[in-house]
Image 1: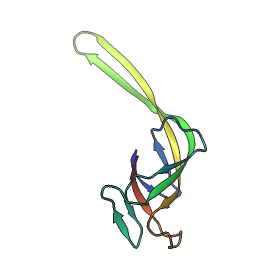
Image 2 (image 1 turned 90 degrees about the horizontal axis):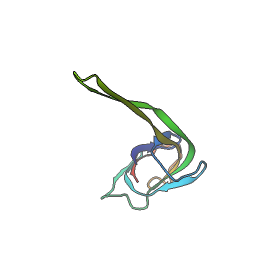
Image 3 (image 1 turned 60 degrees about the vertical axis):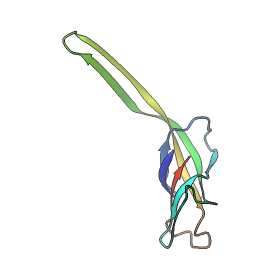
Image 4 (image 1 turned 180 degrees about the horizontal axis):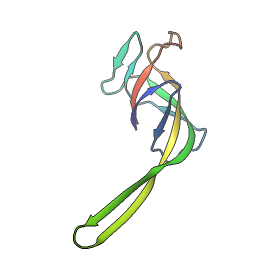
Length: 111
């Protein structure tokens, strides 16, 4: 999963094999930034990690696929609902450890 994370935000991701209230550590951070400083990884930022908690599992809205073959009166309608997980970003570790927590730290992570 790849995304732009900020502390306190909730994100929808495709995750399997995790339970509600589990804590996840996402150590593969590509970019880490704050108001004062930005660090770009090559390819990852060393020592940086995003900590998240699993809040719930749910299904996204139904995606309907409709196939019609012209002039044959042949149609097929199928659909599915994607299984998604809500993650709450708890902490972003890396740069700015000695700065105030009020500083808006942002991480771009891929896991």
